[in-house]
Amino acid sequence: MRSLVLILLLPVAAIMQLPAKDAQEVWAQDNLVAWCIVPFDAKKRGPAERAAMVAKLGIKKVAYDWRGEHVATFEEEIIQYKKHGIKFFAFWSWHDAIEPLIEKHGIRPQIWRTLPSPKKNTQQEKVAAATKAMLPLAEKTKTMGLKLGLYNHGGWGGEPTNMVAVCQALQKQGHQQAGIVYNFHHGHGQVENFPAMLNLMKPYLHCLNLNGMSGEEQKFQKILPLGRGLNEKAMMQAIQNSGYQGPLGIVGHVATRDVEVVLKENLDGFRKIVSELKE
Image: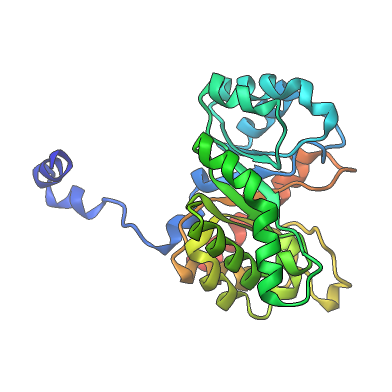
């Protein structure tokens, strides 16, 4: 009511300038999430350097991937993100060391885990087996009030129809927090029918991670900066058309290069494509 009153008090010219909520809002800077930036960094930054780098690029969220060597600095990473106004948006898989830190620092990261590809005979058996494999983490995330993201990484478990089926099975068992994290770089097999697959996944999507999507003419490159592939613009157009308004991952994922440079390349390509979609 208060906001309505304030709008009514504004002059007509000011009302005309109020931002319209439309499909293009998905491309807002605040929606961007840095992903694959911890093990994938030739400079081997620590928490303070990494947080400063992300803040410098204007990214406000980080999905945290890690290796065993990073466990000792989990808490420092959280502290540095807070210092720089960065949201600890997601955490890869699980480690018991993160549990007390979630409560201590009041963070609520999504938990991302690859959906398995069970070696069963029928589709029904595969869905049941994959659901069962995810149940322990589903119970953990439900208890802690965290979202669980089923992460595509190729195989049966990376197919959108199967991810949706497992989400539905988990939700039927009371795990409404279960959803999907869909990665372009693990979705080259779905390029042709991406609009249809996106619409299928949309009710369950927790995050979409973008990537340049090469074609056969480019001799297929799994990781490619946005704007340098042949297919990502059409896929981003499908995202805009779908009305999806959720988070978008900007991917590092090149261990032999400075991740700041890789993120800059992706951000440049992202902005170029978005400007073209807005024309």
